[in-house]
Amino acid sequence: MSQPLLTGPASADRFPNSGLLDSLMRAKQSSLQPVLADPDKYRLQIIYTQIDRDRKNRPSFTNHFYHVGQHYHYPASTVKLPAAVLALEYLNDLNIPPATRMLTLPVRPGEQPVLADSSSQNGHPSVEHYIKKILLVSDNDAYNRLYELLGQAYFNSRLHSLGFSDAQIIHRLEIALSEAENRQTNPIAFVNEKGDTVYKQAAQQSAMAYARRHDLLGKGYMRQGQLVNEPLNFSAKNRWPLPYIHQLIQWIMFPESQPRQQALNLRKEDYQLLWRYMSMLPAESQWPRYDSKEYWPSYVKFLHLGSEKQAGLPTGMRIFNKVGDAYGFLLDGAYFVDFDNGLEYLLSAVLYVNDDGILNDNKYEYDQVGLPFMKQLGQVIYQYEKQRPRPRKPDLSAFKMIY
Image 1 (cartoon, rainbow, N blue to C red):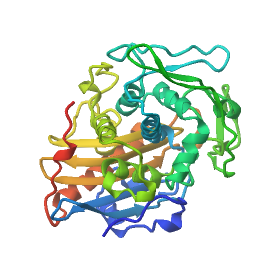
Image 2 (cartoon, one colour; image 1 turned 30 degrees about the horizontal axis):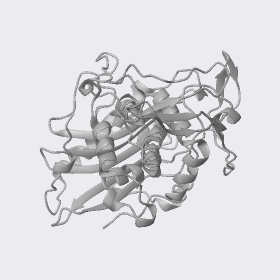
Image 3 (spheres, helix red, strand yellow; image 1 turned 90 degrees about the horizontal axis):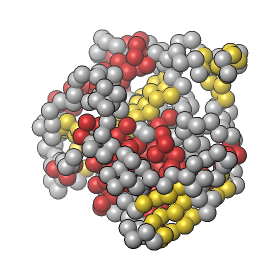
Image 4 (cartoon, rainbow, N blue to C red; image 1 turned 90 degrees about the vertical axis):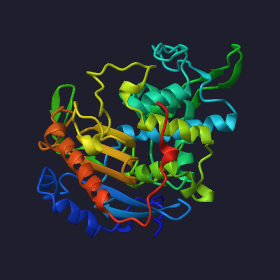
């Protein structure tokens, strides 16, 4: 059975709860139980997709849902993956290779131009290098550069044309800017190896109108060291629902599953670039070279390993994923491959851990509740996949990357 598209409105009535997911989780007396006892409190959502292959190794997909679409969640760094994908599309439309030097010029007072990048091997900033930093360590500045390249209006209109109709990716990350400032994006130039400018893009001002929202969260929040006793309004913050995270990862890993009218304009080399950096570990990178204490072996691999800093992935496993964490939300969308056991599946989850209900106080139960839940969930599904009957063993050689 092939899965229905997870595009369109991200409403709960489209994603009925799966008895399988519920029974698998409840059978495990573990760190899953406190969250499962009150999934609404934790705004828990899970999507698990079984993958089976036919005689020609063609995949089919069967989805299982748990509480999907019932609550708003702040998407945090998961918005960086669509930024990476659309940036590659954008360059394909311009016939510019992703390794081309990209210059970002200032648009606001006090801004500095971005003309070099000492973390890249050639010292130049590029879309390819920004994507690498996004996927390896979830670099915020790299995402902001791609946001500026795309411009707010194109970014969202392209997502809507792909069927992600509820998407609203409307601000940069880590830097505090007004709604008006986030509508304005920087001048960009691309320069080839000869030093010739091959494309110039003026500063852009988005006039795009967005569907009005009423997303309130918590009972209070900290502002400039003072407690404000009212919910924090997320209505002008990014929206990228879990089904969209899951669907985009499926399309990246299985381009043949894209509907013709919603196909991404990516080359084979683009998919290879995404696969490589979605699955690469920080220690496997030479440019940039990441400190192993700050970026441990399982960094940004929440599902399966949680907050483990010493353990690595099982031999033969690779996880092609994108995570996010902010405001008490933990998210991970992933395609798992176990080459040794011939296993593959998709798993995405989000939960919210904020017992005191106060936002911006840096008191979130990531290590006590959230990451242990993510780790246990990933391992429950992995163990089930190891014993799940499947019609034939898949050929997964296409996903073996050279790091």
